Length: 397
Image (cartoon, rainbow, N blue to C red; front, side, top):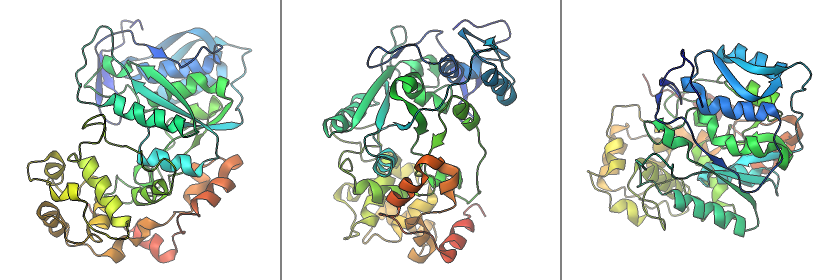
């Protein structure tokens, strides 16, 4: 990328985070040679990989459709050029393509989507000019999960990129949607008609388990739609409790890995994500006993320290669900259970159910019926009482 005089070296990126720019070139390596994608697709890749540093103008190498250019300006006040007066926006294909992380939520999404769809994985690789500032991140461990997914009969494509290395702080992305650059660039090749993501109910209807906030805004969805890739988010009406239940029924459930720390062979077991996932797994099991790895947790472990911060906690609803169901908690988690007010099981049973209102918002019409049918194989619907408990959830008071 070449910056113009009014561009910046630090600007708004993921969420509310400011993202700095350390290097002006990066690579995206596709698994096989493809024909040039529709110009609007490559322009969208350019936008989401450079967005924090663009002030008013984005010049790309091929002319985009006027509809795409108008929408970019409407959403971001960015003029994109050149623009073709004759190019039609990309027409949708016929197949949902899953942006696949290999984690629990992603595996659950794969389980309820149509069988045989492509799974495209975003893999971090080294940058030729920037040292790896997070060698403890086990990129290859996640790649192993994705590789095993392919061996089990799923269609898998791994897209390699050093994009995260040009950003500061590291690891982060210029825009969260940059995780889908592989799907965007391969969309024509894969006949993609929707881009599937694993986002859960907590990410959209709740403030990450702290409070029910209701339906969120559309964000980047209009741009995704105009390139023929409407979002399909089958987990949007399902909590992390439900995704764990669905993933455990999947052929991939035993290899799903959300933690990027630890070793190549196994997760670290002591970060807050590991603690939460292990708790959830134990809570939905028949025995409801704490796994041995949690019994070894110490007060100084990062997962415990993260749970000692100011209330409400990140994903507090999920923690209350699990802690209220598990027998003989280790001392650090018993302390947390007390600090959260010794929650009762009845307060969180809604988290085991599907929020039906999400289906129209989260799944485009061609796949809505089949996805809902698949979800209901694993989870019942929320009734009026469960819905009342969900929408009144608020731990910020």
